[in-house]
Image 1 (cartoon, rainbow, N blue to C red):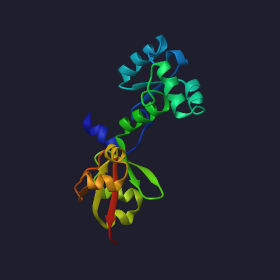
Image 2: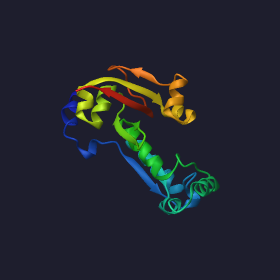
Image 3: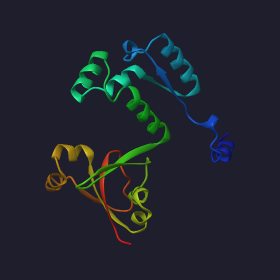
Length: 183
């Protein structure tokens, strides 16, 4: 019952965690799976778990290829980079754990930060440093796709794509954020 669930939630029991099954298949089965994957999907469905199809062989070959060759190879297999293998597994894990990513970017580095889905800007800032959360003023925010399309932050600003968000702003997946703070 609900009361019991609340009582044991803080224990962090593995048996209470959602499951992801990773089915390692031959490269020829990567796009559609096979009979064993279907059996695993049936089992996973009864448990409320999910299944991700991976091919360890394909993953090993992908790291050796240049980007264009990688895309051609995956296309020949009938899959996309985001829709297969380790990327799909990480994406599924983020989904189950209710996580998301936002970015910070400066002249010398761009960095991805993992936060809980639904976190507000000050909480997200606190992942970088507790002073950022404590002295939060505002978050200058733009969508990742807008930044890529614009080419740089200045162009995005001139197009009006950078927003100034306050303490109640809920960070969105893929936001690029510059935190303003004062301690």
